Length: 454
Image (cartoon, rainbow, N blue to C red):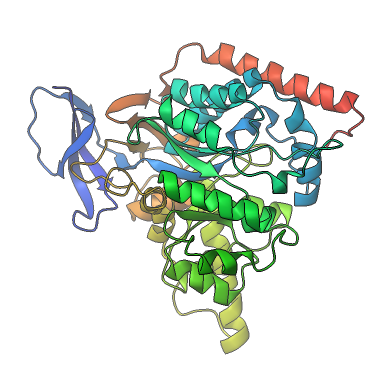
């Protein structure tokens, strides 16, 4: 029996029945959390000194296009319209399976390095099965827990080809994945669908794709927003057809009208906010506050490392700070003063990147909190570091002040993936060089086609 005991740490369990534990222990047995309390005795376990450390559940990145890792920063100055034209209709068309593999592998490793133990990889640049398999292999080789959301490319159609909005999601490819590398519904890497949805496809395609997800028991995730809808009134028609439920995940949703947002919430739809990118590229203000006012919480995703950093703590802070600012401004406008107390406590921000991510994936019984019986996905933060010490409120320290520099250790399924501030991965420098070669070639080739540099 493999056992690990973290002793004398500050534990933020994100489990209401356990709460926060000062000077507490976490016992891991056979890949799962066995106990969380002070004074656990386990003489045969690997002992980890947790003094001066904060232990939290592994973070859950609810939305990222990991295939763009090799283009870090390249799209930082693009609006959403430029992104559609220059990425999907341009750079994306030049990717080989090798490009997809190394970007996904290194992007997933960076997520582990930043404290994310689960990654929702929204892969929509897979024109061939070889591209898809390369992405899946990259996730598996990284060792991260992941939901591979199988998408579809969005190039400009060639003469005689239909527009991507008119192409149903490929059933045969989904069934191939379910019969092959992603057959285990409880495995380290599982399958979901990254479909077009009514904002980016015809009603016939949306209906087909929603039926496919429902039939196969998969999450159907889709972007919502960015220009006019391809199918005006499409959500209402899908709701009337009984196709919208808790397996549906909406990314962004900035322009959803209030009445439709309420209907979607009542049907159990989940929402993934990518706050920093939404404000940078022009989606609009994130819907964080609109969701909270209706009794539900968002999940948080990074979205695009081609635009911004892959750090979930920063993303949660952006969402929290932006919504507090909006709330403060509204109170000043309506009452002539700032609120008497903060509208969103820091603990909310931590829930968005832990328990809510687990709920969105339908895996709240397995991940998202440090609860006995759940998978041992956890992060150890060095709270003795200069930028965190002294700690008065551990939750505030984690949400408002922690950065990559403080992530001392990361465990996934009971196995250490990072220790003493270092990723436990062989050949990392060689992988970085392959990523750099891929990115440079893609940029060179797109510029040769006459596209201007950023």
